[in-house]
Amino acid sequence: VPGRVDYSLYVITGDKFSRGRPLVEVVRAAIEGGATVIQLREKDFTARQLVDAGHQLRRLTREKGVTFIVNDRVDIALAVEADGVHLGQDDLPVGMARKILGPGKIIGVSTHSIEQALEAQRQGADYIGVGPVFETRTKDDVQAPVGVDLVRQVASVVSIPKVAIGGIKAYNVEEVIAAGADGAAVITAVVAAEDISGAARELRSRIDRTRR
Amino acid sequence: VPGRVDYSLYVITGDKFSRGRPLVEVVRAAIEGGATVIQLREKDFTARQLVDAGHQLRRLTREKGVTFIVNDRVDIALAVEADGVHLGQDDLPVGMARKILGPGKIIGVSTHSIEQALEAQRQGADYIGVGPVFETRTKDDVQAPVGVDLVRQVASVVSIPKVAIGGIKAYNVEEVIAAGADGAAVITAVVAAEDISGAARELRSRIDRTRR
Ligand code: NI
Image (cartoon, rainbow over all chains, first blue to last red; front, side, top):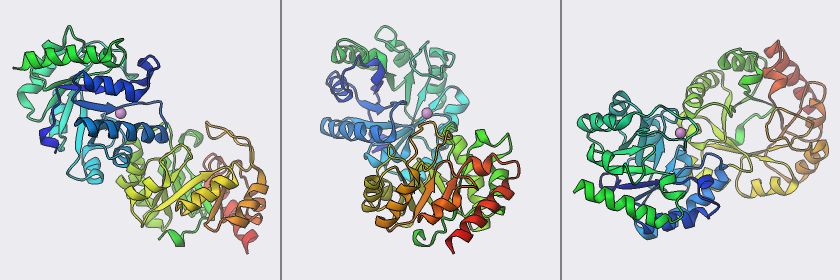
């Protein structure tokens, strides 16, 4: 149910940052460390590879009770029975994704400004990503950091869950949660860590501590 | 209705080969010249751009009574209400696409061997592409030409419609139709032509003449 998702620690896959470790093992360790949402995001995979990886992650996340989201591709989200899809500003519009997915699925949207955040909410998104908060080079389409201030501003006007993203590490995660984010999304801070579950655990404990 | 499609002249878009002419005008001219199927295939477009182009082409093809297919993306095919989707060997498997699309939509599959052709038919494809018949550099993932012989062999064992593809021009289209193809798929032979509708008309008349 979209309304009851725990967005606290939202881990996005990044196979090329994972030091050759199998995707499913990386995700298993992230969940062990406290990841509450897993997003499959592999821009270099073919659809067939996404389906294969998606099936494995769906099985694992279902077993662990963790929310599973697919990046960009609504068709692949449906094919692997993911809980939802995450859309960028260049992806399918929310309304179209909703029509294809039906009402029971989660739709998240990347936003980089107050206007985009409000627009995503208006269009019926279940949650938004807000960022990049800090400097990051993980994504190919790098944008200027929006800063913690945008998280604070968005938090004051947008009522759906807000996940901060972009350059978030253990040393700055408390800032974004204190600014009003419902969760923090990370790629390398978890998947590139030598100790994946340890890195996730540290982030999760800082997030939980800051929020209470 | 998948069973009643005329695959005679199957024109695939290729915006970068179209000499800067607007996609919808290129397609309009192709239809004027006798294209019976239009496939939207733009690997460099974002999903948002595909949706925009898809809407325009859907409006036009519906008005003209021409079949409209979207390459690769089942979600975009649904979003723009295309008649179906065309899948490569690395795309979603036919069964999954069918589950998402429902029974009323067309699913085509690219095949490069007898085995792949039979497998696509077994999985419930509505038609197959067979190729590349001749040398071509239009697609990024260039494969060795399979030759007209493969078209002939596939035609003798596969009962669903077969569309020959790859390096087909006015001077060799009769060969592939004579070999048993139900139609010919082209990109540059039409979209890169100075006279688009003239090029389509020439192909179509050779196809019709060979088949009767
Ligand atoms: Ni995207």
